[in-house]
Image (tube, rainbow, N blue to C red; front, side, top):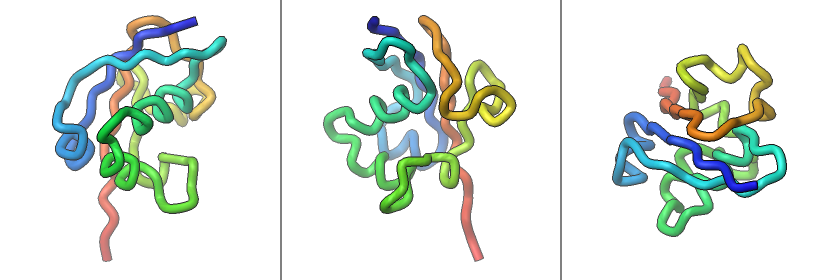
Length: 99
């Protein structure tokens, strides 16, 4: 199954990707938020975006990104295992860390 997911990136994520709105295709039997984010950072030229989203040695983007599916935070759904359907919109907003 190939599913098209609309992506919307904000802040430094948008700068690293060079665009704010675009679509990706996720090829999985049951596409999830996790597989869509993996597909996002595996695109050619997305090395900087991957560094911003994932901490070194981690496969969980939630420490650096607030992820919304159709405007709802994925923590209120099934987290990274939230199932996706055709033309869903995922938004990734950077979480500011500071000291």
